[in-house]
Length: 379
Image (cartoon, rainbow, N blue to C red):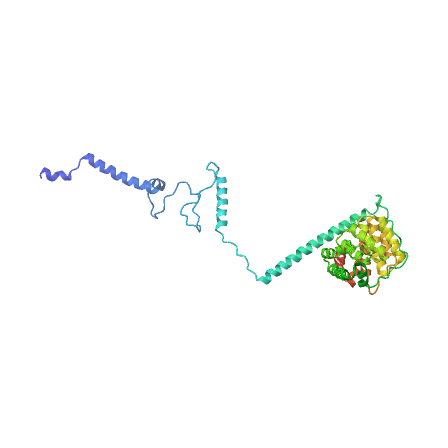
């Protein structure tokens, strides 16, 4: 056999050893790879189930679905040098803010106009009720304070009573208005002034006191002896709480008319100015003349209030209690006297008697002044 034919079948010993070694290496390496999967994962191989490679740091911040078209992860706010816990807290607050921005706006309830008006009315009544209750509580506290201070009497000297001629006769008999206006102002001017007087009286009854005073002022400046003009102007000033001027004009009415008809109003003017001697003088004069029961009751109420203002609550209560008997058909001056007496009981701390008086008033006239509220506050 030629050399060329035998050559391919022969292999050198070196090459045989090399092939044997490679085969052993492949078998041994394959066995080791099967027994130690970590070595294969570290080298990037995949297993039979084609799982993703494991290992590495876990991903802390994942992409959050959002209504906005963001394809990137939310950045971690805060300083990069902060710790992980602080940065996570800031990130959570940041995400909460984003949620609040993405939240749909609240839909307000649409109400009918009538329902809105009813709600506003209920709200207004509730506020008015709360305000009134607070006022009543304030009045009650003030009444208690006055009662505690009632033991201290007025030591400050008050002005002396004015020198005035006493009224020893009945009121002057005044005739018709038109002849007296004609006599004082003349025929033509008398008609104009009489019309101005009645216009002023109408405005006074409608409680338009500024207009009433403006219409009557020209008659005040004129020289005349018509007491009704001074009386009306004094009442206008009294209702405007100009007590000093009101007292001057009412004193002129008292002198010209020789009447005690406006003594309670005149006493109240002096009470506001704390001219106690004048109040006492006019009360004694009113009691002596005694023109009518209702007028004396009005003066009694003012006098009792003046005594209470001076700290003599006991005497004030006695003055109003004297001769008091609840009538079966009370008139307006009876209700006013009962209200004043109930107020004095309240100021003196006699709550049962005060409650009794206000209860009597409410039983006959529920809307008289604020008697119902006073009774509710006492209860």
